[in-house]
Length: 438
Picture 1 (tube, rainbow, N blue to C red):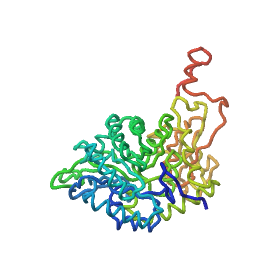
Picture 2 (cartoon, helix red, strand yellow):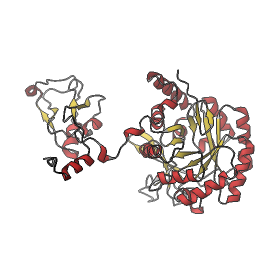
Picture 3 (cartoon, rainbow, N blue to C red):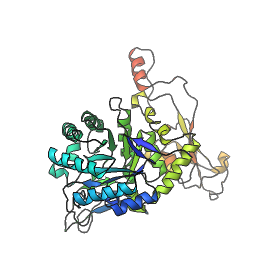
Picture 4 (cartoon, helix red, strand yellow):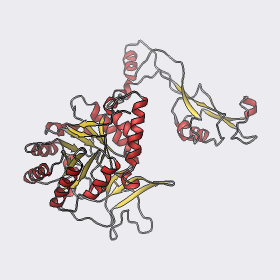
């Protein structure tokens, strides 16, 4: 099996699976349970001036029967004293010397940052994560995302930390920003050794239509929270890739956002992350999900003849390009496997109402398709008009039968041509305009 051990900004870990700073990393008791389950690292719940919390604190977005597709929280940083937190950090590190233990910190002055860093160094942690991303509660006090949204301030505070830090420093970035790369560059200018992203997204998940108060409910009122869970994964992947692709950055990345299984983790790694951090999935399913993550990633790497996760890091980064650099001459069309088609006709409805009207419902006898095992006699079957199919993929996405609709590459103009090339050749009179779609 592949060796899953990694080194991230000088911090060694037996595997890339870390717990993100949050409710599952609040106490030594939880840390012991997590490490017993197999987690390679822990980022402790953010330490600062103890902050009281409200009740309730969480809400969630459901999708059909699936719970917690998206998760919203208004919980703040640790409500326990720094003394207690640093004492327990020492206890955990002494018991688990081979695991990565990172202290997440948040402060409001240079002197306070220095104090927390020194106390963290004394506790024996392997590194620090600076919380520049909390989108509620702390930002109103000039901390959290209020820092992360201002690159100049983020750079200054990172520089304060680097004045005294001897252990690696990770800056945790907020997604509540126009260009996360600018924030990442600010962290580098401040001297950070690595970045982690994303923190939670400002959100309201639902409104109670009887009380007209959004959730979570706090004595007749609510507030915006931080959104996380599987629903934020696409946003997180995009931002991780943005940072990994930036040639001026060059900092190791810890990926966070909607990671629930080994496949999610592998995708983050392929887009540039060295370690991944998990929180919501543990709150939903418990610490032992890491067992399947470790086994799944190891099996995947073995199947790809990759000796370690490091071989996978960034493998997909270069495939992301600007739209104007994509090949206009590439053509794919939908192909329906009528042997397993169940005749639900969702593909026809989606194409007819939401796409390009290129799937017809035809009599199976007249088309020669016949009746498959899942279709009733006399029921029409969906047939793709390939000449009109634009390859949008919608039908394959709505089809409830795995592998029933596939996207097949068609022979076309063998010479690639991007939009940028097309515009240049058109301006020179070298080609005729591409006719519009009828």
